[in-house]
Each structure stands twice: as C-alpha cells, then as structure tokens.
Length: 452
Image (tube, rainbow, N blue to C red; front, side, top):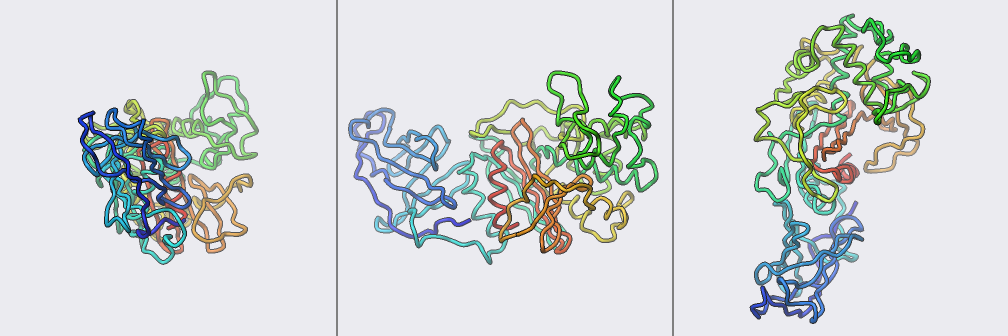
C-alpha cells in the first residue's frame, strides 16, 4: 500500500460563503483531491455561488466513491462535515498547502493526489507504520477506535491506541479499554480444552455425547459422532448458528470444513459436564488467570462499566449495547489486546511451564493441520506468497507460506466489533488488532498488508 507524502500544491477556489447568514466572509474552501491511502482519495468541492448562505454551507466532502457530504463553516479557515463528525482545514503556505483532517480525535495531513507524493512503507519499523497508517484507515473506514499489541521475540513489547470509545465522545481508547474478542474467543478456549486432553480428562476423538451422558440433539444420529477435534477444526457438520429453528447436522461430521459457532457451544456443554464447572469459572481457572489475562472474562463484569468500547455500524454509528451475561466460548470473550497477546506469548514459548501450559508435544498437536481449506485464500501480507495454502488446525487457522506457517484468527460480532490476531513461531512475533466497528476488517487487512 502507498499513501501520499506531505508535499505538492493545493489548488484553491476563491469561494465566498456566509456563516449563519451574517454576511461575514470566510477563508476560501479548498478544491481538489488529496491522497488518503493507496488509490483512495478524499475530494473537496466548493459550493456554487447560488448554493452558499444556509447553515454555513460552503461545499462538499467525499471519501473515495462514497456520496458527497455537506461541509459547513466552523470558523474562518476551519470547516466541519457534520455527517462524519470530521473537521478539516488547510495548512501551510498557499503554494504548498496541505489538507488537515481530524476525526475521532486523530489528525492527519494529506497532500494533493498525484504522482511523486507516494510513501512506500518497506523498511519502516512496524510501530511507525501503525502510527502513520491507522489514523488514515480509521477515517477511510469509519472506525472510531483501534487498539494494537505487538509481540516481539516472544514478549509483549509495544501497545498502541487510537481514537475514541464511542463516536462523538471524549473518552479516548487506552490500554485498559475493553473490546469484544468475537470469534477470537474460540482459539483461547481451545487452548484450555487441549489442556484437558493433555491431562487425560478429555479425549479429543471421543464422542461428546458420551461425556454428556445423553443426546445433545434429540433423534439426530449423526451428532453422536462429533468429537472435540471436529469442533476445534470446524468439521462438525453444524451451521455457524441455527436460524429460528432446530439445530441440524448438514453434512457428515469430519468430512469437510463448515465454520461453526454451534460446535463450540456443544463442546462447551460437554466440558461443563466433564469438569463440573460453569464455563466462566473453568476459563478463569485453567486459562485466563494462569496466563495473566486478568482483564479478560467470557461474561460481563461490573469492573468494565467505565472501560468498555462501544461497537459501531459500518457507517460509524454507535450500536445498541447489551452485555453478555452468559458465557459462549464462540464469541463472548471480553479482553484487551495486551491481555489477548499473552495467549500469543504462551503459544510462542517453546517450553512454557505454567500450571496449565501445554507441553511441546501438545502444542504441536494444536498447531498441526487437520484439514486444508482449499477454497480459502491466505491473508494478504506484504510480499508475494506463491503456492500458499490455508489450513484449519485446532482452534486456529494456518497459512502455510514458503517462509513458514503463520497462525491466526479473526473475529466479527454483530454488536460492532472486528478484530484479528496472528503469530509466527519462526520469529517469535505476533500482533493483536481490535476495533470497535463493523468495518474494522478492512482496516486490519490493510494494516496487515504492510506489516504482516
């Protein structure tokens, strides 16, 4: 990805407008296209003389191919885009003026779109790329808040936060801000389940119905063959979620991939039967507290009241919020990037020695391909990766690259959260990216293409 450097000329239109109808002349509103990211530009267009004069209207603002948004005068030389909660102004001398954008309490400077103003991130430190690129991606994709954790040489070495907990609010995202991990809940729980297998408490290849002592689905014979290994590799035959009807097995368990949150709920029920513990207590005792994930929980905690981020729609509007009072290991994990990164650290330690750590042998079991996902494409990363293949391991996914395997999992909750995590055993590195927006996936994908 390339973005435009802070150089070049800014064409201006000598547009006159009035503020609130008082007849006061304002500074000229900029006219032109300015590089935001890659081929994506923002475009400002002054209003025609006949259009000015109401509510401070001076022109329009557009991101890429999206519709034009009206711009109003805020004060001389400063304008606002109310629909986007965005402020803009021109900066510098007239002959080399830049466009300044502020949104979600993040500010970027943009140069005019055109050749000669591009920046190539190759060779940049990952932290510098994040600091420079994330605010631009937030503006482009309507993402109010982003929090990142970097793992380097097997340790959490850097945390970075951008934006606000809720659009239009004053509270900034910080290292303690709580996000929904969404489907990244699954590999975390999977690690604890592998611990049960290591201790001989649960057999990965034994029918889960046997642990329950009764059918999970009445009258459904196929579900009696489903095992923990099938759940963790998404080959149960269940749909992701039942939709207004009874749960059914849609294909022969173990025969192919079918991503399923229902499978994890089935596994969770069996683990509760085996251990005699409710899911939240089991997760705290065998996963979260041993790994030092002290901010994390599969159920809402009162201590999150002043720390949580609000989810947002793809357009950047706050979603209605309802806390998860009951644990569902497929999607309800509350956490921070710093906390979740401790799981990556655990996966990267060759000889972890915690009370419930997996041995090297069981770690290899967890990270061994169970089935190749031939229809899936690897995650986009810097450089070419010819011949790369995608595999489902136990809890995680794996991209098999020529440089070695990369293990990862993404997450997306309809409550307005999208996130991503990845680790590379060869280098001891990893990353956790959490956003409070349903358009967070384009952001983390664009960022990963530069630093992945």
